[in-house]
Length: 75
Image (cartoon, rainbow, N blue to C red):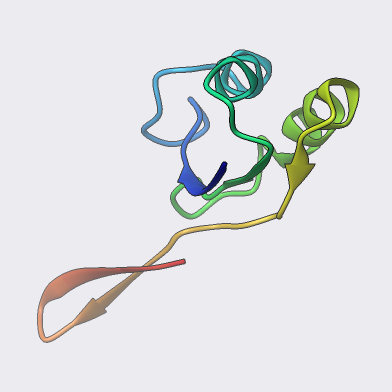
């Protein structure tokens, strides 16, 4: 299973990076991407945990932009 839109406590997620990787593994996810809002701060820790657990990692970010006065999130 693949999940390419996950968040850690580096933005608005509920899990620390290593805990998120552990939860993903237990949920059957074998390829994941952490796409925290406007930061890549958690990616180094996620990469270490993903490598240790055998999960494939796609580095990501969710950029916040504004269009016509509204927030737009782009992965």
